Length: 333
Length: 286
Image 1 (cartoon, each protein chain N blue to C red):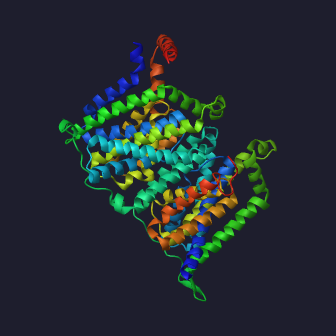
Image 2 (image 1 turned 180 degrees about the vertical axis):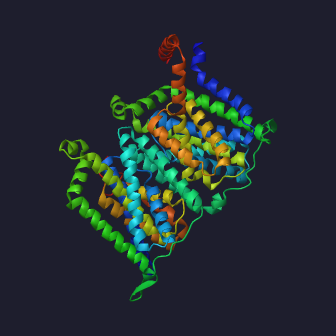
Image 3 (image 1 turned 60 degrees about the horizontal axis):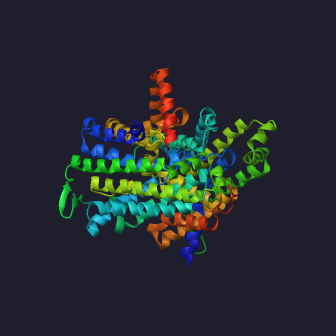
C-alpha cells in the first residue's frame, strides 16, 4: 500500500498512456499530447519546483527538433542516438542560457528568458543553410527502434510511434518524479519558497537553479526531437515565441508544483485546441481568456480544481484518512 | 563613409522609436513593480487603430492623436477594473494575466483585420527626402525623430518637473510611504499605467508608416522593449533612452553590413551588455 501511494503518479501516467488511444482516434494527436506533456514537465520543473518562470522553453524544443533532424539527415544515426543528441543539445544550451539568466531574479529573469528566446529564433531564422529558415528542415526520417540490426519496435504507423513515445514518456516521468522526490527536488522547493533563507542555510542556489535548468533543457530537447520525428520536419515555429508561450500556458493551466498536473495541462491544451481550432481558427482568444481566468481565480490550475472538487466529494471521515496518509507518506521521505 | 553616417542617423531614428516603446514599460515597472507583457499588444493596437482611422478617411495627424488616447483609455479601464486586484499576487500571476490579455488582443486584431499585413503611407507633406548637402534623409524619419524627441522631453519634464512626477518617483521607492502621505496611490497607478499604454500606442502609430502593420508586430515589439530595458536598466528613464538608441544604431548599422543578422545582433548586443553590467547601463541592483 505504501508503495502504491509512493508511485501513484507514475501509475496514473501509465493509466493515461493506456487510456489515451481509447479516447483519441488519431495516433498523431495522441503522440502530440505526450510530446507536449514532456515539454510541460520540463517547464514545471522550473516554474513549479524552482519558482523560475521561463519564456525560453521554445529554445530547447526548437533546438531539440533541429538536433534530431540534422543528426538523422546528415549523420544517419539511429533512433535513440538522435534523441540523445537532442537531449544533449538541450542541456548544453540550457546551461548557457541559464548561466546568464539565473543571475537575475523575478521579473528580470522572465524578461531575459524571453529575450533569449527571440535571440535563438532570429539565429535559427538567419542560419538558413542549416535550419532551412522559414521552411524548416524537411524529410526527416523516422528510424525503427532497433538493436544490433534487429527491429525491436517498428515506428512506421502513427500508433506504433505512439507506443514508442509512450514508453519514453513513462520512463521520463518516473525519472523526473524520482528527481522531485529526491533531496535535489526538496532543495529546489526550498529555493522556491524562500531563496534568501535557502541561501542562508548554506545551499549554493545558483548551482541548484542551474541543475534545474539543465534538466529542464534536456527534457524539452527530447520533446523537440520526438516532435521532429513525428511530423518529419523541424519547423521554425518550434523555436518561435509562441512555442515558449504554449508550453508555459500548458504548464500553468495544468497546475504547478505537481508533475502529473502538466500531463493534464498538455492534454487539455492539445486536445481542446485541436477540437476548437476546427470550429474557430481564432480559438487562441479563448485561451487568452482562460489564462486571465486562471491568473484571477484558479491559481492551482486544472489539477488544483480537480483536487478541490475531490475534497468536497469526500466525506469528513475520508478526509481524516487522507490526513493520516499524507503524514505517513511524509515520514517515509 | 556616408552610408555609415546615414545608417547611424537612421539608427537614431529607429532608436528613438524604441525608446518611446520601452519607456512606458520601464516607468510602469518602476512604480508598480509589474512587468506588462501586454505592452506589445498596446503597440500593436496603436498601429492598427491608426491604420483603421486612416481607412476611415481621418488624416494621419488625427490618428496620431486619437489612436494613442483610445489605447490609454483601454489600459486605464483594464487597470481600474482588473489589474489592481492582482497586484498583491506573486509576480507570475501578473505575467500570466498580461500574456492572456496580449493573446486576446492579438487574436481580436487578426479576426477583425485579417492575418495579413497592410501598408500605411505617410501624409503627403512627409513624403520624399530632405537634403543637407550630400546627406539625404527621408522626411518621415526626420519627423519621427522630432516627435519622439519632443515626447522624451515632455516625459522627462513630467517625471522631473511636476508634482505627478515627484509622486511617481517617490512611489517607485516606496508606495506605502506615498499613500501614508495621504496621496491617492490607486489613482496614480491607473494614470501611470494609462500613460505607459499611450506611449506604446504612439510608438505603434508612428512605426506603422515605416514598417507597415501586421498582427505579429506586438510580439516583436515586446521582445525589443525587453532588450531595451534590460540594456538600459529597469525603471530608468535614461536607461530606456540610451538602450533604445543603442539598439537602433546596432540594428541599423548591421542592416548594411549583414542584413540577415540585423535582428540577431540586437540580442547579441544585449548579451554583451549583460556580461559587463548585469543590471543594465543605468540600472540599480534589484
